[in-house]
Image (cartoon, rainbow, N blue to C red):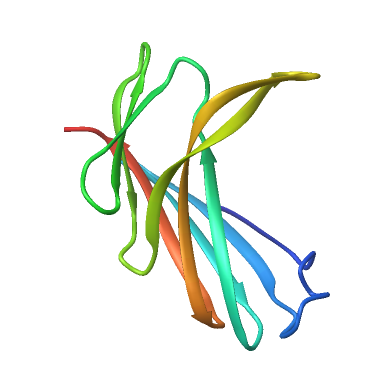
Length: 123
């Protein structure tokens, strides 16, 4: 388990602090994002899909990543968040941007807010 936090948003009303925890279990990786503070806020998380990896949606909060030489992985966003695939970019090298899909989750409401994203072997 690895966890870290930052206070880069404390300039906003309610002084939000973002904490992320990565927990590796035998059959899954869980990424938990927590935003503490006060007041109403909107939080969005992004997973930029790297070149060579395919992504498909399966339901409201489940996505499949087809990773060459690793197989299929299931990405699940918990029920507290809405999830989408958006157009975005990745930077594979300095000064170069490639259009790629981005899986996003979004939460809105009074702080604290929390969302867990799970990556596990696909079906």
